[in-house]
Amino acid sequence: MAKVALDLSQFKSAGVYTVEIDQSERIQVTTQTLRLVPGFSAVGPYNAPVFIRNTKDLYKIYGQTDPKLERKGSFFQRTIETCLLTSPVFAISLLNANEIDSSTNLDVVDFIPFSVDSAVENSPIEDDIYINFFNRERFWRPDEDYLQGVVNNSVDAANNLSAPLFSLVNVGTKDLSFVVRKAIGLQGYGVTAKDWYGEETNIPYEWIRPYDLIQDYFIQVIAFMGDWSNYDSLSTDPYYSEFFSADGLIPAKINDFMNADQVTLVGSWTGTIIPDLKIKQEQNNTLKL
Image 1 (tube, rainbow, N blue to C red):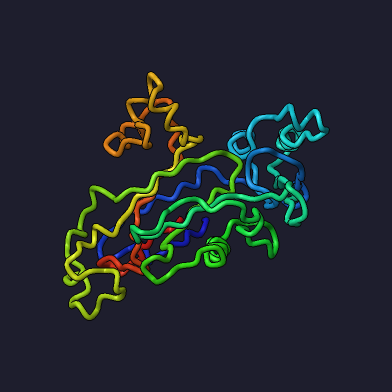
Image 2: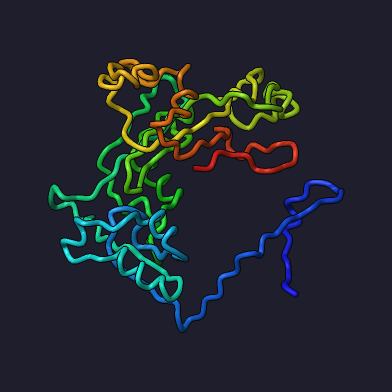
């Protein structure tokens, strides 16, 4: 009989629980049949091995066959398709990023730090080297600590209030657009900071005022596929003018825009800008991007 491991930390109190474990699909992989397929792809993660079980995984991660790369002699997707006829594979899409600041071909990416100080302009900072956002000790992986390091080196904060509380960067291969707004529909956080922390002296940060509601420190980050920054064009478009003005996405229309058929929603995340805020069950509820 197969052994089942349970994470007891998921149960917050005593009681009777029903746990379902799906073991209907168990993939047996041996080292004699498992292969590593290197190549080049215009989409998907770079310089990191990815386990591909079937063509569905392949197309989801690396996309369909790329005629442009095939004309250059790279048949990455087709090679994986052939290997999958025998067994799952590890695939790795290679990228030689230019990090030498001696030409105009330097590989860079924009990032944007966000501050709660209304006097600070939250705008993208351009031209930071692409590889600086990755931990490259072994394989490449995006690392939040590396992003924070880039922010610390790029932003001159006058004080704690003007310093960025969180930052966003797109290190993928597809255009993304982000909307950051105050979170709505929260339950259980409509209490003052003074009541939340017990007394005023327990409030850990000076920028949290005693009679502010805790729910006012929650935000929602929404990511959409594509570039939605051409407000002049969108505001005059027969269809998208319902959602956009010349100043940007109309706040009252955000939910309608998220549910529009022509819009691809990548994800939505809600969390607090208060570091290490604990909910009643003592779980960490900080915003994680």
